[in-house]
Image (cartoon, rainbow, N blue to C red; front, side, top):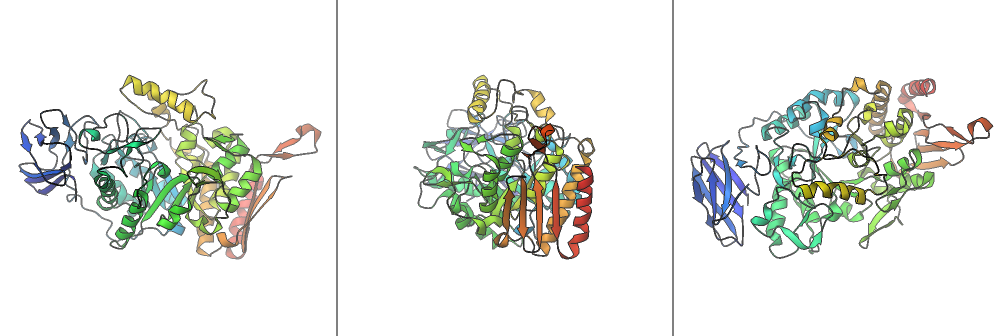
Length: 574
């Protein structure tokens, strides 16, 4: 059952909206004419209206009261408070008929925020930088949420129109053009979606029905009603959204944000239902589909449900604890090489068990290939008071050393935009709420949620400069050596995957705590590096020598020559 405005032909559009407790709903067109819809026993209003075509704008009028955007609006050309626009998805002529997707083991994910990835900040301008990613060896583009959010700039996690790509980035057809361009270049496209809450400004869903939970809460906004009265239709709404993004935009996968906060006490949770739906969709399409759950800590249930990727921030936090002494992360403590060693061996340091976060007790080695690890994420960078990146905090040599660890590790590698050339630009948190109460709440909320940072001074997320400073510059304004280094590491990873060298089942991790030497041992290869400082007997060193840039790598067979060249370069440059 599809909701929203669906063009039937060039002169007629079918409308359907769920509003079980409302007696009357009309479609109000741009010229003011109202067309009443007929209510069915299931709480859905529907009807076909002649003379309404793609590009026409409309709102729903509830009884004799206010008019609001469509809960399943496909496009909001004037923002969250404006009218919805009819979109005909049949008009776009796809060019990716031969696209089969990317196997999970070949995924190398590059995450972008559309608004700051390029100077233009649009879907179409993003196409201009795709060749850079292919040249470096990336195989998948992950896009931070694009659903319509309030204001002129936003990370996307405050979206309120879940079916509508942000008008700041372009028309829905422009998003399709970006996906098409990615597929032409061999890049899969994964979209970040948010189903744990909905944004606080421009949120009109409650005017239509019981979309939100009365017993569950989130730190960021209203939680969806997945397990109370009328929850079956709310679940249908979310499941329809999953299908919509994958089918209408030819996406290769979704990443579900903060999946643990999708509170649901039903026998069959919405999280598992989405996994089942995705598996069904896999059987009806001829391309690879990836479903990723963000838990940050280990949740064995996701793997059993059928999620083929579990997002983790554990290894990067363990690395940060060594390089920049950031040890406390939202109630989780990370300390030194010991914790990094446990992360590398298990894949996680913490797990979600019996409703709370605990230190991992079991060895999850068998599922390392389904864990997504990066060196930096949008959260780690953007939730710093000044949006500072690892290259700025620890220096490019330290970043290069750590990158050798994360890119040659068995999990799926993840890189946040600009990391590959150690961009000097920050990536700040930014929002543009109009409500004064919300604006103040954003500042106070960030201080509470990320109390491990010093908030005496910071870049205000409400300031336009937070958005403008976050624009990603051309790669030549960054560190070209780091960019070359990432390209070489990704080429090695590709070869190691092809030759079966990267194997989590036979990997060994050793750490020499006296010299900070970290080594990943595979049956036919190894990679070793030093992070941070280690003790020295040299009195001039004050007991500490920074060897954060040393990287060694070795493999048997045809890879020897390439790796030897890298070692010589590394020895000369670090």
